[in-house]
Image 1: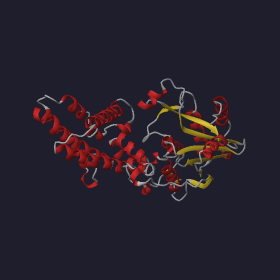
Image 2: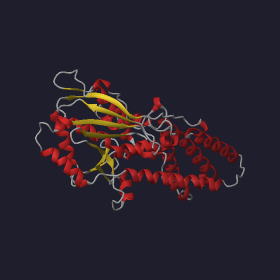
Image 3: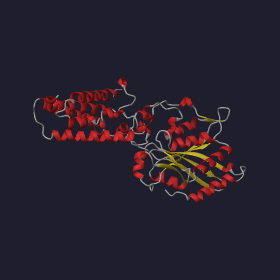
Image 4: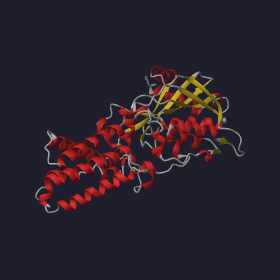
Length: 394
C-alpha cells in the first residue's frame, strides 16, 4: 500500500483547516469504512477506517489507525511485549481499496449524516493527530485499536451523538472475539490459552465497539441532535463485495479431539504400567510433556509479567500449565517434600479441569474445553509417575 507523502497530506489538511468555514467544509463527505475479516491472524476481526472526500477539490483520503512501522528499532521485541507504537496513517482511497480487493475482503461504507461544523472538527482533529508528534499511540487490543479510535473521533467531534445502549450485547470480550475464531479451532484454542481474566469482563455498549463490525452496527442505530430520531448514518453502501464461504473443519481436526485421543493413550499407558509392564519410549514421551508444559507456563508468565498487553494478564491457565510439574518430575526424587508438592499440583489440575464446565466455573476466567482434557492427562500422568517412580521416596 502506497502511503501519501506526509508533507502533501499535511498541506492538504492544513489548507482546509485555515480557510473560511463557509464554502469549504460543506463540500466534505465523511464516512466510516468497515472491512470484512481476512485469513491472516491479524486480520480475522476485520478493520475500520475513516474516509474524507472533498467534492470541491476531488480529494479522497482514508485515515487508518491500524498501521505500524516495520523499521521501528527492535520491532519484533516491542511487538511481542506490547510496546510497539501504532500509527495514524493516510492513503488515497484507490490505494486503500486496491489492497482489500486483492485479498478479496468486502468493504462497506457508512456515510455520516453530520453538519458542516462536525465535518470541520473531524478534519481538524485528524490533522492534529497526523502531526509527527501525535501520530503514534500505544495499542491495546480491547481498549485502544483501529475501531475504538474511530469511535472516539465521532464522540469527540459530533455534537449530541447518542449511542443506542439498548442494543448492547453485554457479551464478554472473549465471547465477542470467539465469533470470529469459530472457523479456526486451533487459533481459538491458542488465543484462549494466551489471554487471561480481563477477556471475561462483560462489555458496555461503548466497549464492544472494539470490534469493527460492532462499531458499524452501533453507527447504524445511533442518533444525533437534541431530539432523537435523526440518524447518524445518512447512507450505507457496499464498495466491494465478495462471497465469503467459511466451513468449520472436521471434528477430527480440532483440539478437543486431539487431546481426547491423547487422554485415551494416557489411560492405556496407565493401565499397562499398573500391571508392571514396561512400555518402550515412555520416559521420552513423559519428558516431551514436561518440556511442553514448561514452555507453555513460561510463555504465560512472560505474557503476564513481561509485557504491557492487558488481555494477557491474570491468566489462570497457569494452574495447569504449571512449572511445578516439571520441577517435581526432575527434582522430586529423594525429596521429603514430594507429597506436599504432589498435593499442590493435584489441586491445581483438579481446579483447572472443573473450571472447564460452564456450570461449575470457579475461576474468573473461561477455560477452553481442551484445557480440561489436558488437566486430566497431566493428573493421570503425575499419579502414574508418582506410583512407579517416586512413591518409595515419600
